[in-house]
Image (cartoon, rainbow, N blue to C red; front, side, top):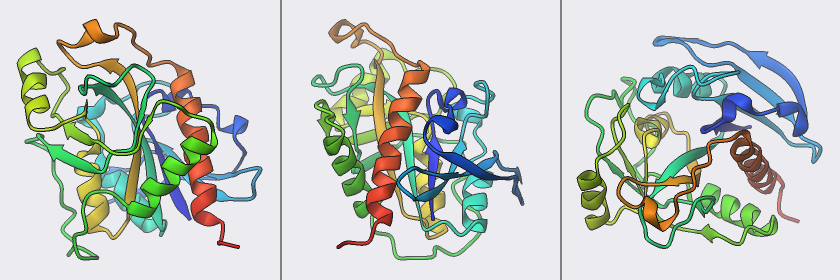
Length: 245
C-alpha cells in the first residue's frame, strides 16, 4: 500500500470527495505520536494511506516543526511500499509561474538543525533522493489530467525555516541550480531512504521566491491547492498499483 503525504492546505482537504475513509490509525512512535493516518478507498478500487504533515483542520505546525521522524516511522510501522507527497514551493527558476507543477529529480539540503536519522541501518543502497517509478507515475498522472504547465524535473532546495529566505539566499540558490525552494522535503527524503521507503514528490508553485515576485505577484495557498494535488497523487497511485495488462 502507498502513503500519500499532504503538504500545503492538506489540513483543509475533504477526503470524502476522493473516496471512502475505511479506517483511521493513530501510531505511537519512539518520537511521539504521528499525525493520524487515514486509509482511503478510491472509486478506482485502490486503497492508500493519507496523512497531513502540518496537522488536521488547520495549520497546526509550520514546516520547521514537523515531526518527520514520527511520521516516517509510522509509515514504516504500517508497512507502506512507497510514498508520494505534495509540497507547496516558491519558484526560483524564471520559467516558473504560480500554479505550475514540478516533479523534482534532485535536492539541495540547506537545513542545519534537523535530525535525519532514526538510528536504523539504511535498508537499501543509496540510489538518489527520489523514487524513479513514483516520479514517472506523477508525471503521467499530470499529463493524463491535462496539466499543461508541468516540469518533469527540477532541483528543490530545502531551507531551515521557519523564517522565509532573503533575496540574497534565493540568488545564491539560483546560482547553484535550484529551481524551487521549500522547507519540508528534508529530512523527509533521508528518513524515508533509511527506512527503505521510496519517495517521490509533486511540487506546486504557490508563490515566487523572495526578490522574484515581479515575475508573478500571485500567491495561492488555498484549499484548491490540496484538492488538485490529492487528485493527481491518487491518479499516480492508481498507475503504480494497477498491474500492467
